[in-house]
Amino acid sequence: MGVVYLELKRRIKLKDEKFGVVVFDTETEKVFVTNQVGKEIINKIKEGKSIDQIIEELSNEYEGEKEQIRNDVYEFIDQLKKMDLLKE
Image 1 (cartoon, helix red, strand yellow):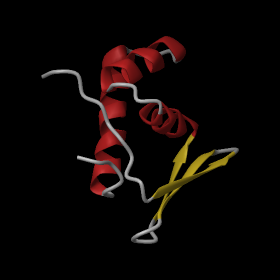
Image 2 (tube, helix red, strand yellow):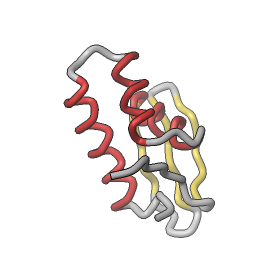
Image 3 (cartoon, one colour):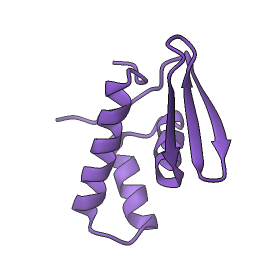
Image 4 (tube, one colour):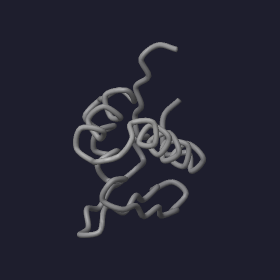
């Protein structure tokens, strides 16, 4: 598998909060709330970072096994995909 980059759909609006971020889909009017780590992942997606770059940066920032961080990142991305928040 090559390098995978993600992009939020244009209709997505973000509101930073102390606890993380509120993600609002302006088309469906659905709201997705995430914690501080989810906010970091979303910000890294917005910065144009690849999934591998996101995992590497979070592994350097947080204590924990890299494999667990990788699993958590992919699980979070799957949630974003299920909510139709990412461009394919």
